[in-house]
Image (cartoon, rainbow, N blue to C red; front, side):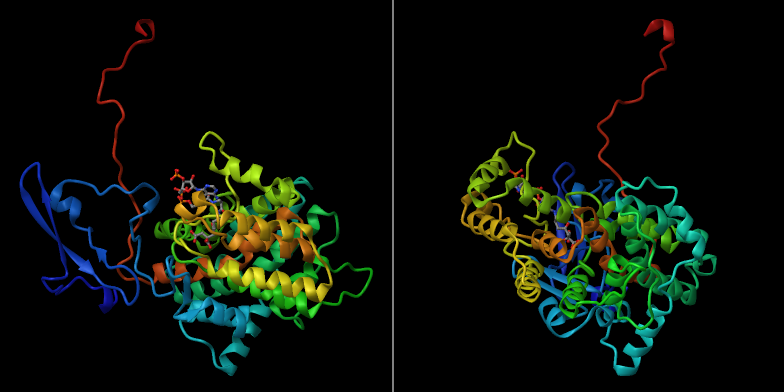
Amino acid sequence: MSKEASSAGTPANNTFTLTDNRSGKAYTLPVLKGTLGPDVVDVRKFYGETDCFTFDPGFTSTGSCESKITFIDGDQGVLLHRGYSIDELAEHSDFMEVCYLLLNGELPNRAEKYEFEHIITHHSMVHEQLTFFYRGFRRDAHPMSILCGVTGAMAAFYGDSLDITDPHQRLIASHRLIAKMPTIAAMAYKYSVGQPFVYPRNDLKYAENFLAMTFAVPSEPYHVNPVVAKAMDRLFILHADHEQNASTSTVRLAGSSGANPYACIAAGIASLWGPAHGGANEAALNMLREIGTPDKIPHYIARAKDKNDPFRLMGFGHRVYKNYDPRATVMQKTVREVFDALKVTDPLFDTALELEHIALNDPYFVDKKLCPNVDFYSGIILSAIGFPTTMFTVLFALARTVGWVAQWNEMISDPNQKIGRPRQLYTGPTERDYVEMGKR
Ligand code: SDX
């Protein structure tokens, strides 16, 4: 553990004292300070000293780990990657540079960036046998099911990068996952539309390569639209990492058992698929299509507020952001740029803007601090570029792979790392005797 968060030698005033009123006994717990964000009460010895568990389903008040990668301030709408704000990275950086930053902790110099991009470019092909996996899926299989399956299957093809105790093998696996996810994702799309797979090209940048593998066809040349490529690259930056969200926590928990990196990332993909998480971008666009025109918005706002109606405004709300998601702000700006460049409009964008305006002035949403999140506008851009809604979460997973890999590496290389094994509050039956069939 780094010195910032060490509990050793905690000054007396950096403690919490709790009294168990059942016994009158007082317990003193160390408080750990990070460089930013709330202090934490170190409860690692709490059970051993008190014979009680702490209880926090959904981890609303629990820090699961120490990390140096991403910081979020939900009240201020701040998102930092290794200290750099998402607004600055989205404006001035590119996805390969952000990948290097997340993995290594510092922005690359020119030579470092060139070498990193060269490595990723030359890992973008997949083993030719992997293509046979696709033929086992129905053509109408959701591409997330393919992404999940094929990513896990990578462990069967890259046996020289499974030993998590070997930093060199961890590095190769990290590069392979970041480099091959666009190829696997594009192949999932091609398979769903019955077109031949398109191989990666080493003369194209990361986002350009992905667009070419997705939309090029062998029968004619494909020209990457630079505005679309820039928008794609920026979307990847906006989705790259996000502290200890559900899918990242899934990757960390899977990795804590020593599972290989491909299995861990497949677990993260599975978790991201849920509509409450990364699946919300697909659900948000489907919701906007269902709403259709702005005059229907009040009906859906009423449904979202109705406790008896399971309907929620998809793309709204966040466990951490309680004023605004800085990524949604950049995303909305990118919608305008893409529409202007492609000279397209989409009435759903107008519906989305009106829905945001109405919701942000409705007491229900204001009181519950519900604001648009990263998934609210992304679908509009992706739809304008030509992706079907079923590919939206695939693109989220593609971009988040670097965040999962960076967080996985940070966990594995932590000398204090141990297997994650939460406990519970048991409220089931106490011990009872077995009942023979005839007496039931
Ligand atoms: C992502 O964690 C991350 O960082 C995730 C992510 C990342 O980059 O990894 O940012 C990506 O997953 C963004 C979130 C995408 N999901 C959605 O857009 C789905 C719709 N939103 C929700 O389901 C919800 O807001 C969550 C899951 C995002 C957050 O849920 P919380 O923090 O557990 O909050 P909650 O469900 O307890 O809701 C608090 C209250 C509830 O009302 P009460 O029970 O208090 O009366 O707000 C209500 C909820 O009913 N509420 C909503 C709502 N979201 C919450 N009501 C209507 N519409 C919504 N969208």
